[in-house]
Image 1 (cartoon, rainbow, N blue to C red):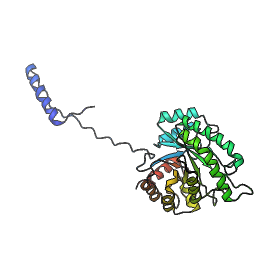
Image 2 (cartoon, rainbow, N blue to C red):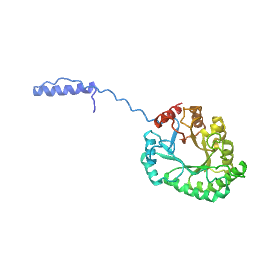
Image 3 (cartoon, rainbow, N blue to C red):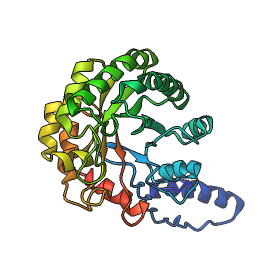
Image 4 (cartoon, one colour):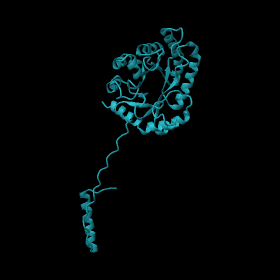
Length: 304
């Protein structure tokens, strides 16, 4: 409804009075009442100030069917989602839903723990899986896909397992480059979550990616795993930043959202931004109480 200001109103009142005189009727001036300004609704917590986040919908909204998890992430204002393997997921439906909700699929898992990429006997299957990943990424309009190195192989040294990972990634790199997909190898932690895994901490992952030497093979740099494996999050990030393809996070202990553990995520997120990281950061964490509170804690951690 349009409200007149006083000057406009008085000009109209003069015209009305002239008309009233002609017709022998008098109009009384009346002020238009002023409506109080309505308060703007607060922005949803997923609309963050400095960084942009992708909700891991394998760990958030687990009570909901898979499509509803995507809707729930959008309702909280997040711009992207990520998930684990492709099995059992309707990729066409997921792609359409993300398109309709204006969400991006930041990344998915293209190769898991088993069978191990660190065993050359699995490289033929790995290459086939990378062709599948490229096709899936095109459907989903995703740009990145996680690759896991594998658990310890009996009779193999860490050095030989890492050499096998390099060999496998070199086979896959041309496929990824041609398909416009970045493969992101993820170092884990073996102290808390992944005992018996062959790749943990940043130095070996950085060395592997530098040896593969492809713009389509980088690191899924999970800050939660890095904190447990090596600490010095900002220093290590600076040292290996040329090989960072994607960031994920969770606080420690507990693997919950920022603000629930020991990590000063405002400091770490600021470091990543200052180094030049502007892509999505995966929220691969378990919401400690509920998703809305977790989203607000993420929002607070990004407010610096």
